[in-house]
Image (cartoon, rainbow, N blue to C red; front, side, top):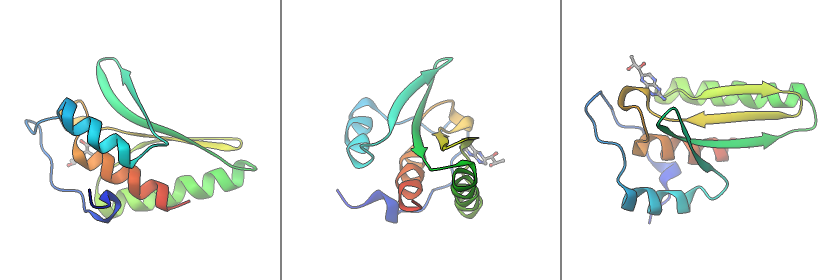
Length: 111
Ligand SMILES: C[C@H](O)[C@H](O)[C@H]1CNC2=NC(N)=NC(=O)C2=N1
């Protein structure tokens, strides 16, 4: 499979399908450091990035925020001392769209 970090997010509206189980199984292979979580019935992608202090964690959070604005797809970003937790899902469809996997792969590239 080609590198999904090279793809752009596509427009996604309510009614678009969430990824199928087969698609999920293929896509997660490209983002091995991410875990799939289910919160209140909503499937999400999550990764915790570790840093040496708060300032470095915040700098990374800000880079992710810039990426989110570029692609107009936005994560949950939790900045703490020494770590940033990024969570991707697609609010409009209450689950995972290919966009979320693209953004997870792009987030990894910001490190
Ligand atoms: C109005 C606008 O299209 C929506 O709020 C966009 C913006 N960013 C988004 N980000 C994410 N992660 N999911 C969405 O459904 C989403 N929708």
